[in-house]
Length: 427
RNA sequence: GGAGAGAUGACGGAGCUGGUCGAACGUGCCUGACUCGAAAUCAGGUGUACCCUCCGGGGUACCGGGGGUUCGAAUCCCCCUCUCUCCGCCA
Image 1 (spheres, rainbow, N blue to C red):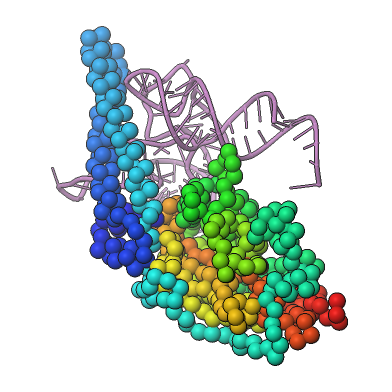
Image 2 (cartoon, chains in turn cyan, red):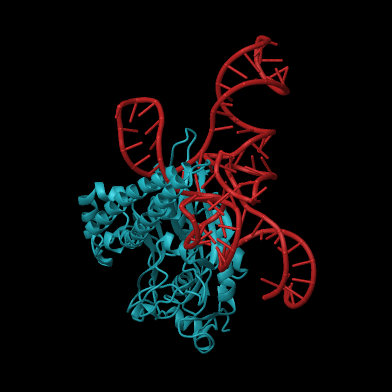
């Protein structure tokens, strides 16, 4: 969430940002609730001060008359405090909910726009393959080589689940280990995170665990959710703590499963592995000092590029427009891989995403820093995808299919897979 | 899953027959004295957040979290979470 005083003092800027982000929210209500809250707190503190004074006055021995008078006064104070407190608590609930709908501010260079077409392409890498045969999409390739089984998964688990089999199963393991090795070489701490997190952590990160439009599975009779990304468990790792600035930046590489409800997400781009209920992902997460976050954001992007260059997958880099940023991101870059099976003759499809959330998540999660001079503030938090396995598999299968129907494995990955081709010699 | 014990400041650890408790004592840390310097010793200081301020200071909250009892709660009651020990089960 944004700092409430910032919202109050920078009303015009926040309003413009909300407009750029295509969010429908009432900032004046937030400001008014904030001011009501502050004045109530002031009144309550004054009443409490009088209550404490009253209690102190009653410590020693005294005549029953005087004592009874003080007790009477104390009772009245207690009553009015309770009254005011209940008003305060309902105002704070409203304020919290209202403030939550205000998105982070946006980087001045982020393209202003409302839909995917307004995203700005920064550059392309690699060569989009041209085939002298009719390329198959990953669903067909998966079936042909007995790699992916959607039908059985549908019976056992439901739609949009899948079994990875044979080389595809090994490919998942190879991809995660490959990504981990790259991250370790960049100073990240390899981490396997829980796949479940508490609701308040989800909310702190900026996810909405409840409601119709939620993409999150919640666990019945608990305040637990299946995580949609390790961003949740990595960002929650230091929730409610004060980090010495000397320890920053903290870089974590988290391996987890990701679960997404994807309710109502059917459509042409939901075929196959592209949009599924469960997938495996290696996520980068960084806690840093505010002045470092812009630089580290570029660093995360370059690591994502390194990973996909190593995989020889052609991609383009996109600077996400304001309307597509989501609540917490100040700026967001996506890598879109070339997917030959997409649309009639191939198209770009998102494979990674890296966000600088500045202090937006840190404020609600209570992650602060203290520097050598004792100055304190909220850390900046960043996240980025190293490998989302299901989508990486799409890119590999579709880009590296060959005229004989086999699929080449990029050489950097071969040490991890143990094979350099899928489906050679008519298998 | 069953039985029990516990959660206090940077750490250890009192308090827990309700008021003198933001909290003893010890360690650590900071400042000063002693010293050529250090160690040891001695003296003083040392939490966080928010609010007000005539900038001297003043107020409120915080003893795992939430609720209750009371004029007054770290202290009493209830619920939750977590940790530890024992038993059961299991990878």
